[in-house]
Image (cartoon, rainbow, N blue to C red):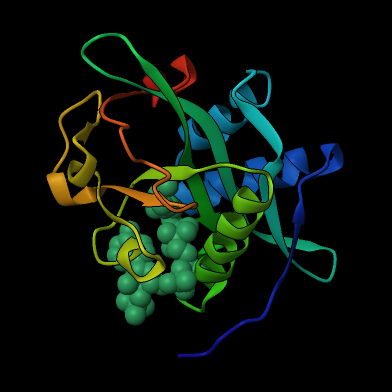
Amino acid sequence: MIYIKVEIRQEIEIDYSEVYKLNKAAFGQESEAKLVDLLRKNNAFIPGLSLVATIGQKIVGHILFTKIKIIDNNGNESGSLALAPMSVRPDMQRQGIGEQLIGFGLNKAIKLGHKSVIVLGHEHYYPKFGFVPAEKWKINAPFDVSTNAFMGIELAEDGLRNVTGTVQYPKEFEAV
Ligand SMILES: CC(C)(COP(=O)(O)OP(=O)(O)OC[C@H]1O[C@@H](n2cnc3c(N)ncnc32)[C@H](O)[C@@H]1OP(=O)(O)O)[C@@H](O)C(=O)NCCC(=O)NCCS
């Protein structure tokens, strides 16, 4: 496999249109690109966790982590992060850019004091970063999903201890 080394930095406002085009190209539709535009206006948005991968001036990848709640049967709420969406330019996929974005993003989330991340994604991809099925903590998705595709990771020791329940995403996710 060819490995492409990228620079990763926080997204800034002038990147928004490039990030839109990137998401549209990677997903082959506009839903995720629109979702990112909407999420930036939600208070679940964390500017330091909207990250772009660059080669020179060109943006070749993007990853976003937003605040979510995990709510148990008694209505108790715990905070966590959702990793979504994530995209790499179609002609540059499978060359390690996604891996660099996830690694950088998880480290930055730790530095910002976040305790855990939840992802709905490919069950053979995320475990290499330490994600395991969220059922370990009895954390469920708010929709039907295959158990192994709904995963979590603790960013701090016991980051999900006593955290259980159903994930509540920002409402913007409902349209996707
Ligand atoms: C998912 C994505 C961001 C991964 O980025 P990337 O730079 O290609 O990832 P990496 O090079 O670090 O890793 C490649 C590995 O990812 C795995 N993988 C990731 N997503 C996958 C998927 N949806 N289906 C199958 N394999 C996937 C594969 O195992 C692949 O390894 P392989 O080439 O040995 O089979 C990129 O492929 C993409 O933009 N896809 C379209 C958008 C998307 O589906 N985003 C994820 C949902 S939010």
